[in-house]
Image (cartoon, rainbow, N blue to C red):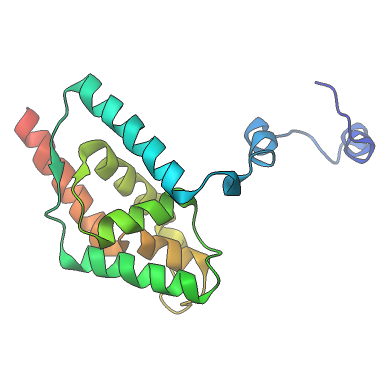
Length: 160
């Protein structure tokens, strides 16, 4: 691997830098603001439709508790209050779906459960301005994690 940055190259030679992340390299080159929320929403809807049709997984669910929608709405309010600095466009899109009580696919429920399980450690109810708290609410909060886990178990039993 060639290192173009002289400062980093010296640190690598000295042993201060022992490795790097390719993901990190690409992440700093991608500008999340280049795509409008509407463009992103349309792209993800198309991708989700392709995935659903390829798996013949045409079921979607909107039976999540009102608390999930309320958490998403609260997350949007708090994010606006801090200048919309928290969450990715995906998180903001998810909050719109949940706040509007849209039906969501099984693959989306899986992504919700996965995200909420990983991000729970950043959910600090005492800090209403932290991005960890706000992002967690945007995805529906603890009630969404509980619902998603229960719904996935219910779906799995039905498919067996």
